[in-house]
Length: 271
Image 1: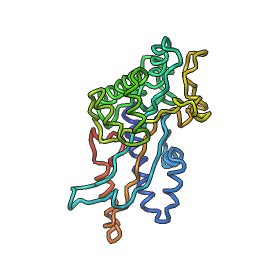
Image 2: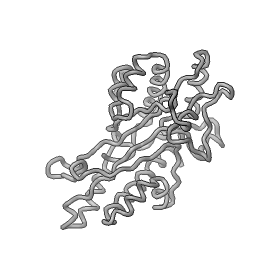
Image 3: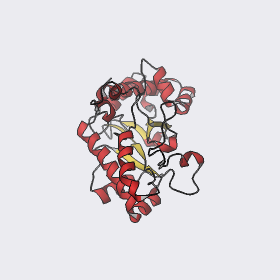
């Protein structure tokens, strides 16, 4: 696969998951999907999830996800969320440059390293890692560069660190990116930050997220994946089944087609 087909295939599997969750009124399918998002998505077709990123799928209250063509012309709901892990700096400042460059090599985009990447066969092929797709390729590249600028900034500037700590694990990260880097999000997605490994009281898993000055490397993935503390996340919401489908089940197909009718602002799904 290339970057475009990766995202298209993900969207297809996600739409299948929505349809199945609507069809199973017992809620059993949705529960399994939330417990094992990647495994369930892969079970819905010939699909192998390509990225080393944590997927978090949640349900929402009916008022937070409405099929309202009469009022809003379509769907109204919550934005998906990009949760970025900002790695802690090395203990020694003279290793900052090396550690920053090594991190960029490990995370060529916020989607993380790619499983079975074409780079293994062709070192000059980076398209799969950057994974452009429904969104513009330039947006993915620019956002990746912005994330790397933010990491360098937060390592050096205590005020930026304090502001990020104040909003950690909230969906207010776009304000930091805009304020300090003058960057406007190209997608209708919220941003959250996590600072795993920064605190002296970090858990053992979070401590494993730190730069290894002896080996001069970031922790290597185990079985192709890093602990969730040491990688980025994508948080998605399963939209509520349209209430109109209670009297006309054909509405489900119409609502799903509208959910999928999105452009560059929704590279993965419609909110």
